[in-house]
Length: 101
Image (tube, rainbow, N blue to C red; front, side):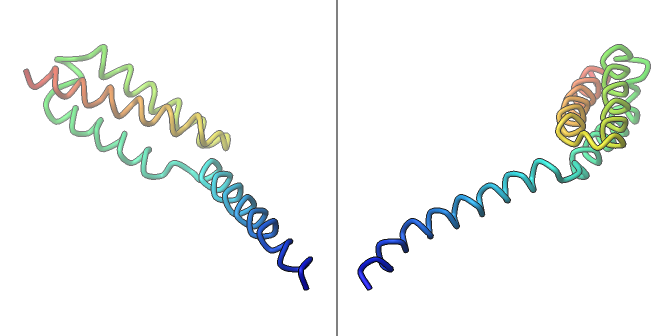
């Protein structure tokens, strides 16, 4: 019996390591649906205050990044798509703020 209880902590650590690995891998391979939606909404909000005219450079960079994110998403490059969508959202928010000033 002593050998059995000695292996229990090792088994528990191994199980935790496998769980964490699956969790991290799963998150990395999930499509960035929310990030893409957030970027699209931010672009629409920027359009509503005239960003395509009043903050055209920032707005266009945002739109271009969203297009790149869509291409990355289609190619299954979820991490790149997630990063590009987040950057597109940030630029769209910046364009909205500039256009509203």
